[in-house]
Amino acid sequence: MKIEEILERQRKFFQSGTTLSVEFRIQMLKRLWKTVKQYEPEISKALKEDLGKSDMEGFMCETGLVLTEISYMIRHTRKFAAKHRVHTPLAQFASSSYQKPSPYGNTLIMSPWNYPFLLTMEPLADAIAAGNTAIVKPSAYSPATSAVIQKIIKECFPSKYVAVVTGGRKENGALLEQKFDFVFFTGSQAVGREVLRHTAETLTPAVLELGGKSPCIIDNTAKLKLAAKRIAFGKYLNCGQTCVAPDYILCHTSVKEQFVKELCRQIKKQYGEAPFANPDYGKIINEKHFTRLCRLLDPDKVVMGGNVKQETLQIAPTVMDGVTWEDAVMQEEIFGPILPILTFDKFEEVYSLLAGKPKPLALYLFSEDKKRIRQVTDRCSYGGGCINDVVIHLATCEMGFGGVGESGMGAYHGKEGFDAFSHTKSIVDKKTWMDLPMRYQPYQKGLYGRMLHLILR
Image (cartoon, rainbow, N blue to C red; front, side):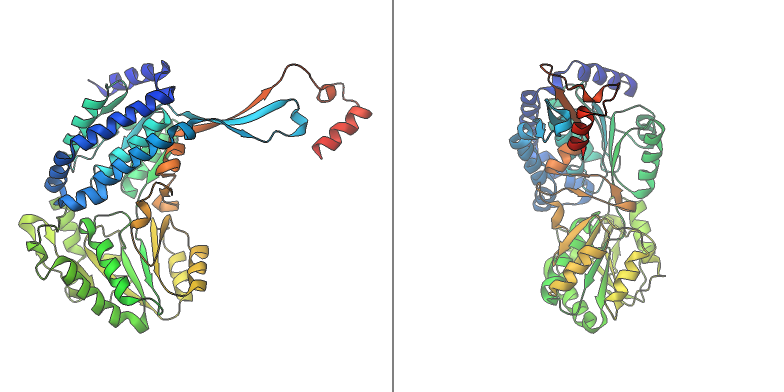
């Protein structure tokens, strides 16, 4: 079926009002949860094929989080969809005022390859909870997972409600030529610009979840062993192909040598002396990205790792020291298992350094200085982050996740996800049993005028 035909059928289905029912939305979410649960083994197998993810990592970072988001929406959709009474000014007597969330309508969800199941199904759960129809476009770079997604959605929903379009750039372009009511995109900044350019043509609202070079700051009060342990986990998870992975380290000069030593020790402890022999260590998504990452390696600055295995598209967990801002590895988002380390002498330098860079999707700070922690969270602009940890801030339904500036716009997860796929109407319900005359012409300068002045003052 052609994209235009799918979208037209979805328009008619949305106009029928079927998706407006909260009972219908919850029923669809329950169906989705049950089907995802049923296909867990196939999802795990597909993630292994596409990205080399182990069963544990696949569940922890993808399937488990999807099931959690769906469950959260099942429990909270009724409350989220309800109208909320707000205060009515005396000047609008007699009336009541309320806000009512309404679905945008026909939505498009475009997802990336690095967390192909999570970043497709989680926004879909939010779209369903908010009462929309959806066309889902998974990445062509993760074909095994895209095939499972298509199977799950086809089993769960009729295409007039939720449909999957597979393919590459041609299909992406064809979808963006259509008029949707809302577009949700996760991916690179370059493609994000194209998405926003197309949505601007039709004044279509959009959420963009992009990326960037997310800094990880280590000051001279940090607990270095714990910092190294947590950074090694978050950076090399999914072989560094995580949009919120620490892109580089900004370390205080006085603790840099000790931190590097601890980091190398933790990498060996977590991934083994021979990471390529570790069945739980993944791979780079394809040869194009593998080649790009290899070009970022500077053998003179590698202090750990640096070895590659082209036949399996693997790059060992790598640490580069003595890196400068002019090095190739600092010119783009790394999105791979390479961690450059830069230093600073005075913490005030950090603020000016980051102020001149594009706003990152995440920022991490390892410190025991409460005043400094407060200052960093106040002064630095970034999407979200952690204090004394990395990555985990996105694994909750209770906080929105999103970027700012060059790293994106809008947020989702939990209530923020429901709101992202909704337009909130503000409504005044004016009563008819009385009608104050003071707002009508001819205006009265006497009693009515003074009353209106007092009310509006």
